[in-house]
Image (cartoon, rainbow, N blue to C red; front, side):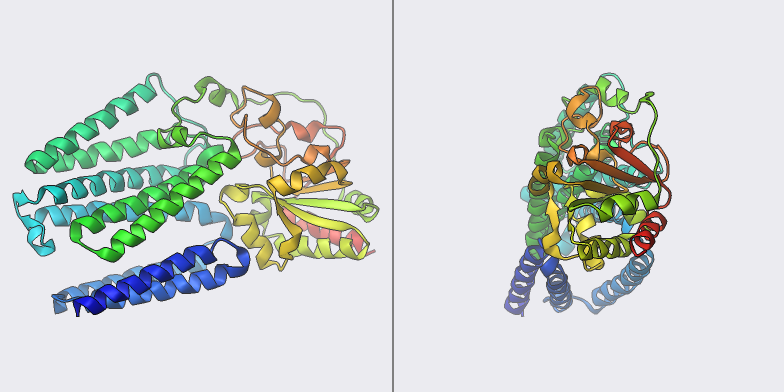
Length: 467
């Protein structure tokens, strides 16, 4: 029976790998999700039929699945696409806390996990347990802060105080000392000190990171949750938890590195809570300045100019997601194509506060995949475009990222929309973006602001195009 269980875990692990591969592209993402669900179903059944599984344990697992599955189903039905980033952060916090609970269960009932007896736990198990505990606690508190920032429950601006990085470094060293001491004697007081210090460190690592970098933080916390699960997998001797945790940890770390590279950020800075960043610049980024007058237009103006344009690049952002304007945007694109224009969609790596967010929304609206282009591919084309139609994007189009060293987004690669002959911006008002930085592009002579709800304004553009 043990051999069958191990083989089932191996099959589930392979399906998880195929799921990750499928999720790497919109055309295969649905299949990737299916592989993941099948793999999880196999893993659950294999766990229920593991040798030594008591009937009471099976009942508890099934009860947990029923309760958790019900909550998950309700959340999945109610959640808006725009709230996915904070939902992901919230889920990461649960994974982290689960690692803390499992570590505590293993510590107080080692006989159940075959790692020794109370007060005489194997040294290797204490190492694995303490690492899983620390990473899980850091993941929990860090994810809670990320959720609060993404959900607007606290400011997205960096929270900075004197000697912050030195304090984090000192706490990191102290945490390492506590882990070594815990491994040497297994004292329960040290166990809970590790937990409390890790909770505090997760909090302190995330608060100095600004909203512009929060997508990278969420990805990194995803990686942390995977490593926490892997560490606990070693403690309780669960092969699938080790493999799955390693997959999540490694894929999250790779994604974080790719995002950091795409945003011109140092991954070391993210790992160490913004260590080495110019804190004075981060604080100055949200200042509001008088850039002069703006040019406001109407949907009819936009329709007239786009009707006579040969090349149009549409830049979707978080505002499009909030207004659920992707369907009418695709309708506008189809009408422009009928007029003979070339229409493409430009996607920033972190548009919508989450990698792939805009791709999913555009795929939902049946926008052809070949029309959707990433930053590196589309940026050279803006200079040839007659119109850049920006719907709800802000920070990812802000030229201050290239010119203003005092800006919180300085150094982040942006979409070069300012190079287009005419730039249309759909926004409700002149508010700054998520990073709290004014967009100087609003005041450029080739920019026309279209104020209003993204969906309503785009619908009016469509109506004008049909006349």
